[in-house]
Length: 113
Length: 114
Image 1 (tube, rainbow over the protein chains, first blue to last red):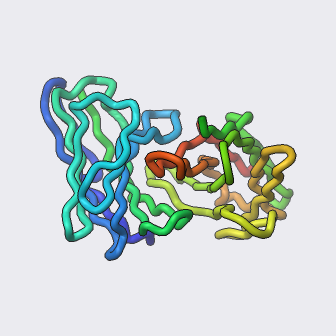
Image 2: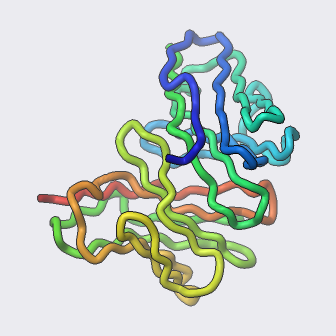
């Protein structure tokens, strides 16, 4: 039990649509990051939020955006969905002490058709 | 740039035998290294981490990892494999210089044969 919950667990969208994925972190975990894991690949860093501000971003286009809220929840939004966006999206959280363990949720499986 | 490499796509081990899953790293500064396990259709579960201190790190489910600075390796080990250890294992490094992101290896699929 990591204390990180994600919703929905599975969803199917059509190319061009928009999707919002949600994550709820442990209390006190003020850092949240999102990862994309394509089939057969390791997770790839999308971006990170610290105290409600983005403070790091991987090689993903601007149509990937996020929000972090004061209640330790966060969202990943993807606009103009493409077929290659089909993947497992993982939310991870940690406290702000360097080196602390990062805990992952079970992920949201997104299929774009 | 920080990176980790897992040279084996798959490792097969007989139940009861010792297992090793290999990982090498390339980092600037002190390495913050992790192992995670992923069971089918599940998220990532934390196994263990190396931040500093003893080179032999003990983690969950009887796993341990040995940090070797001269060989830049962080191999995952277990003295006696269980069938239930069959899963996908990821080595990772945390990039504290920027982003604080975790950089994952491509993963090694571990098959424990009964």
